Length: 112
Length: 110
Image 1 (cartoon, helix red, strand yellow):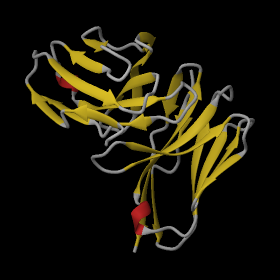
Image 2 (tube, rainbow over the protein chains, first blue to last red; image 1 turned 180 degrees about the horizontal axis):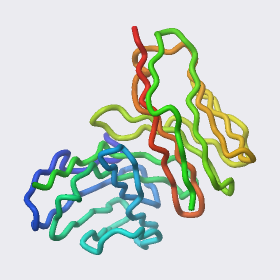
Image 3 (cartoon, rainbow over the protein chains, first blue to last red; image 1 turned 30 degrees about the vertical axis):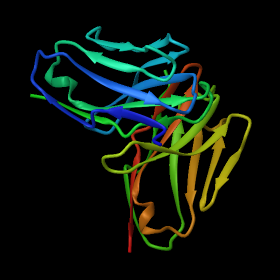
Image 4 (cartoon, each protein chain N blue to C red; image 1 turned 135 degrees about the vertical axis):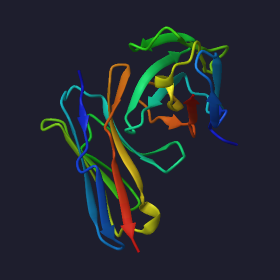
């Protein structure tokens, strides 16, 4: 009974393709996030959703689009993948913005 | 814009020793500060969360302190064990945004 699960764990694809990463949480949390961890292990927030409303949208390319069908899911769609998109992407959730974050195990995306 | 720094980037200590990991942040207007550990190929595990009104939090062998005025937090690990080897990250939370440090990679030598 994983709290925050994301799939796939590994994703290898070619430049120009469109891909999606799925995330689900069974904690009943109200806020979900997507983070990108670069090659230097630096974690940077990409998006967060609170009750299906986008409340943070950092300066990420519009090729990235979060989609939340319900409070328990926040999927990440990426169009026209580029080499620089290669990274580990983490999904997370929290009860409120001021509560501990629970992270998924990450999706390692490799763009060739 | 908040900046979070963790020094050193890597630390190796013999098993059984006590150790301190450091975290500094530039904007003291934070709601809380969190400490995480990240194991290779895995996600992040929340260790401790200190609210801005608190000075410290303890969980088992871990103790985290927070000094907002100086923009510093420390994570104290007592009686270190090989299983403590991981990367430890701190993150400062402001309105709607959690800013991570770059982490300290800790290796406990058996």
